[in-house]
Length: 203
Image (cartoon, rainbow, N blue to C red):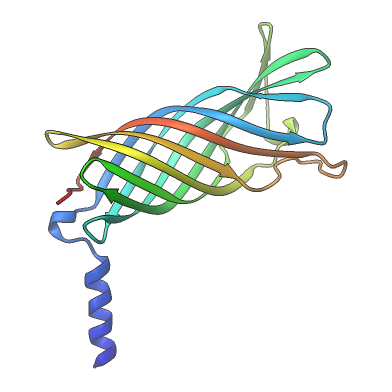
């Protein structure tokens, strides 16, 4: 009987109440890729990309909520090889899982982990000449993972909430296909996002 009461208590603590319905969060924005590359002669630089996604928000207390989301983001950076500068664009599809903490009525903190993979061709362009190839042809592995953290500002608008956020994604693994010569390629990113959230309510 004690186990039954304990199970009911945990279910009541985790499941959202009617005033804390599951929310849908749609967002889009820009990202500033931060490639960290060592062990190669080419030089790499940061560039702005774009993307967006959708997140499900599952409140379980007045200030806390789980989040589960998926995004599509075109990471972009520059690569200079033998004096020629190339613009690189690699589409990634990250899946995120984490926790949100409300700070009052308008501010939020979020953080968690992500797993992503290349969602298309890696585009390379320079001086009007463009090409496309698989991530392995470019020299990148197709899978990435890491952690993320962010802050947000929320503005209620009628039946929805307008959101503004800044997020930092830290890539952990070495994405270089050929690391035998000591090549290391890690990809992190800073994002600025705007979106609309429906369904969740704050007390």
